[in-house]
Length: 258
Image (cartoon, rainbow, N blue to C red; front, side, top):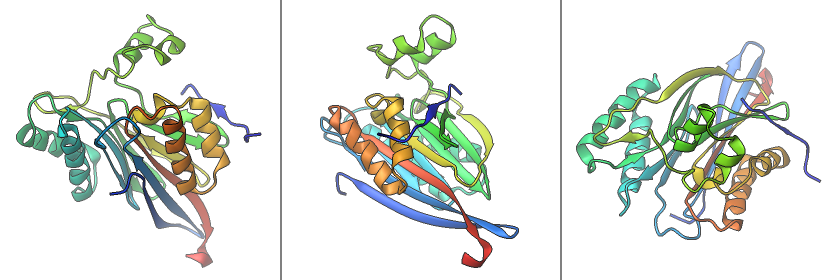
């Protein structure tokens, strides 16, 4: 039986990354344990997802454009994020500039990114990749999808249950895109020791139920194992799309273990 949790309304094929970041807060310190898994899936020839899993920055970008152009767009987003410290808004402006100058019009990428400063992090989000928080057994979605079906749900014209199986559920209405000006949602959050965060592309959430995502995050203490298991679940359901998961655990450590 899987451990209980609650859902809140609020190049190899598989790449695993781990990093650790120590942060000191008075007599206690916390560590950010970061793991990532990215897989091409079972039906795609190229992995158009890109990600970063660093000590103070985690990000997932899902490119779109076809003929490997999506792969270029997502790679540009991650490359810019790696080189920009500080406010994610500035990095997004540079991503947009480079997309306009380096890829054909219409090529774009989603972006969901977290930039840390101690236990505070800034979240930038645009598109249909997602950010989740697992806290005290409750799974919260921190991001809001920029999709046609989510807009219909927001307007009261479709139920969340209907949106799950809508044939155009993957149709995005806002991404970082060459030839278009779209701004991401920017928010600031406070983390707590014991939190677990998941950034993922829609290759996971379109094919794995939120209940299975939540139970996996609860069941597997090791971040790499959890990320691998989520990828396996998506592939077990046919793996129609690229799948990327970045997991960040906020772990409390006594000062004498720093």
